Image (tube, rainbow, N blue to C red):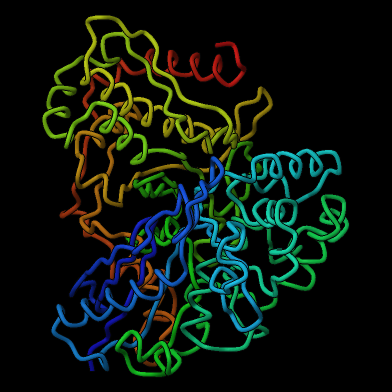
Length: 543
C-alpha cells in the first residue's frame, strides 16, 4: 500500500495542499486563495472602516479553501483518497479566534458579525500594541520567570495581548466567548470533531505565542490577574483542551470533514505546528546548528540546539518546540516579502526582474543609500512593533535599483545581526556563550523567485546558503508530521527526524549552494556597521 501524507499549509492569503510519499516525492501541490483574503479595511458585507493596525480573516475561508485545494491535489496526483495515511496542518501564528463551546466562531453568529473583535485576528494584526507593552512592563516589574525565554519582551502579535485587546475594547465579545484558541488548533479541532474538553492544543503554538512551557504551563494566575482579572478568568476557564506536540496524533478525521475534503473517515490527524516552524522538518533539517530561514511575507528563522540560553530579542526558546529533545529558537523579521511588495507598488512596477539585474550591477552599499527595513516594526532583536523603517543617503543620482539593493541589503543585515545574537548569547558586555549556527538553509517562495536576494544574503553574512529545492518547505513539513501521526506500524517512521530525513533532506552532492563572493563580503563588513548605526539612531528616536 502507498504511504502518502497530506500537508495543509495555511498562509496569509491562501492554503496549500501537498501530497508527499514516504520517499519524499511531491506528488501534487495545489493552492486555493481565501475568498476574503486579509480583512484589513472593512468587515465582509460591512461599510464601516476598520481601525488602523487591524488584520483579520474569515474562518469559513479556511474550510472552503482546504476542501478545494485537497480535492484538486488528490485529482492531480492521480491517487485514490484511500492512499492518504495521515494529515498534517501548519498555520500562521499567532492567528487566533473566539468560539462557542461547540467550535462555532463568534463572527458567524448574527449578533457578532459586525463586531471586529469577534473575527479571527491574523498574525499581523497589530491592534494589541499597548496591551503587549503593559504586559511586558508588569512581567519585568514582577520578575516573571517566563519572560527570559522570550528575550525579555512579550510580542504584540501574541496570544494573550490579542485576548486582552478584546477584553478591553469589546467586553460583550469576550464574555460571549467559550473557547479562545489558535486558528491552527481550531482547524485541527474541526478535522477530528471532538468535544471542547478533548480538543488538542499545540505545544508549538502555545510555547512560542502564549508563553506556555511543560514545566510551568501558562503564566501564573497571579500575574494574569495583575494584568486584568478577566484575562485570568479567561485563561482559567475558557481555554479547554489537551496539550500535544506536533507529530502527535490529535485524533482521526471525522465524517463531516472527511466528506468535505473528499477523504476517507478515520485518517490520523497530527497536532498543528506554526507554519514557519514546519519548515524545519520540511527541509530535512534534523540536526542542531542549522538555521532554517523561511522567507516569505515576513521571515522566521528557526534553530535547534542542545542548550538553552537566555538571549535578549529572541522571539522564543521552547524545549521540544520544533523537534523533540532539542531547544527550538525562533527569531524573525516582520516585513520581508511585504516590504518588497510595498516597494514594487511605490515604484509602479509589475516585477523585479529588470530591477534585480540593475541592482546587482551596483557596488555594495547602493552608492551610499542605506535602508532600515522596519516597515512593519522589528521582531528580532528589538521586539518592537512601533518602530518604523527609513531610507537615508538619497541623492538626485539615485534610482529604483538603488532602493531595491538597499532594501535587500537591509534584510540581509538584519539576519546577520540575528546570527551574531545567537552565537554570542546577546549583545551586552557580559553576554555569555550562545548557540552554534553552522549552516543556513533557505526555504519558502522568495528564494526561488528571487535568487539575487539570496546572493545578497550570502555576501552580507559571509556564509554559503543552501536553497532547498522544494518551494513549499512548510507544506512538506506538515506532510512529514502527518506521516508521523499515522504511526510506525503504517509508515515505518518512529520519529519526526527519521521521517524528515527520508521525505525532505537533500543529498549533499545535489545541494544548491549560493556561495558568498569574497570581494563583496569584505565590503559589507563596514556597511553592516553603517546599518547598525542607523538602527541605533532610529530605535533611540535620534532621527
